[in-house]
Length: 428
Image (cartoon, rainbow, N blue to C red; front, side, top):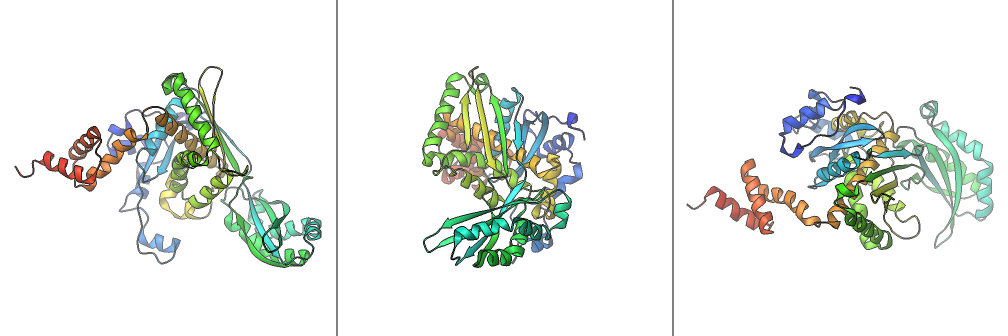
């Protein structure tokens, strides 16, 4: 399928059946009808496959996977797979993408896929001089590290440089060598860890100390992805809404209590795509939150401004250590289909899609907070889960019980059971 055949603008998705949604995805992405088997509970990740992925396997835990519509990223329409258990996330991202679409969608960029590995040296008598000794051996250390992964080097990756930092700890000053590695389309953990372990003894000799830790850093501050978009004031609900969104974002910039929830709004979207594509959610979360405190205090990751036309301009720049080769991305059948659905060619392109979704998610969340409040929309979706938990089975029962609870503002399990009994005429 060519890009000009993809149309991510799909109104009325919530009213379609599951099969109808699959037909739309197949028509507007590289997926074929048979690909959806990778997400069917009966034919998805088998126990045998799971047993090869982690230790002590006893089963698998399915997570719903849907897709966000309306995304235009760098002029290309794309349907975005999202794996999440939280109601409203997929719908919110799609809605924000619809608004951004009217202004051209999302524009993204990214830095090179650079990761760091650290080699910690302890018991160094002369840390300042040891630091310089390591820099003097730069070429030797780079060559030794690159020798561990000739395939990566042949693809244009490999060690780009070293850095040496002196870290003041309670007991002593540690000498910490950083390998700066271009990992190409991998997440890179295995590659940089292997390199760090291979050179650790030599680093210890040069520093005249003893190597301890030899591992990557998830503070991937040299591997960032960026997204920006304009959101029409008219479509958001008016200039006052834009002002209130900017006010809400300003509080997140200034107050870590608000910033934590604000950033969670962005990661609702980010982690859903990271999980869907089989990437490391914990590594991405660690990188994001370490980035949020890079200036010495925890603050918001997204930036919101009002432009000269009165529209909202939103932007996001975060570390994004994701890959297309290695790990679960190449083992998990569902992750493989998610990558196919996105039709991305490089890890950097995947990272940019993920950050665009995170930005959309954050805009959607702030818009709700600046207008009706979070509970109305969220509880409407949550009410359906409560109705099912209470025993509602048919779509008609689920809808009637959910709508009744929401209208009463009483989304509780016991009330759901009572309403379900009324719907079914129990006791009559």
